Length: 101
Figure 1 (cartoon, helix red, strand yellow):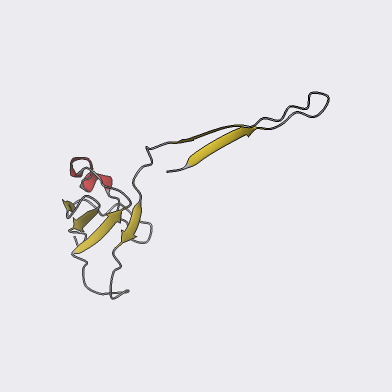
Figure 2 (cartoon, rainbow, N blue to C red):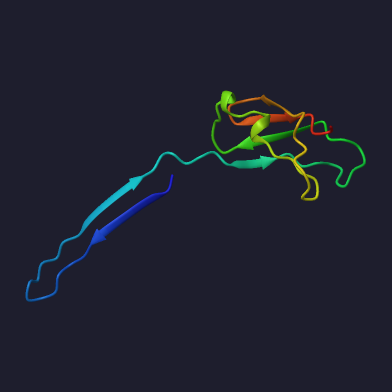
């Protein structure tokens, strides 16, 4: 979680008071990010890829991640993800199937 803090410093003479106040906080709503996307091997290849595994930094509710959340393109072209499936393997790992169509 990112933390933020701030402080107040001291006053110079003639006031001659030294004081420091500090406040720290963290925001606990950091969204999950992809930390691992399975490599395609061999690369390049001349056969379709049947599945790719993706791992997120923190758990994702399987009810909120499906094929409509995936964009798959080849060489910057059109979205190829029309026939994809998404299967939860664990709270952080999902298998994307069907990119070979």
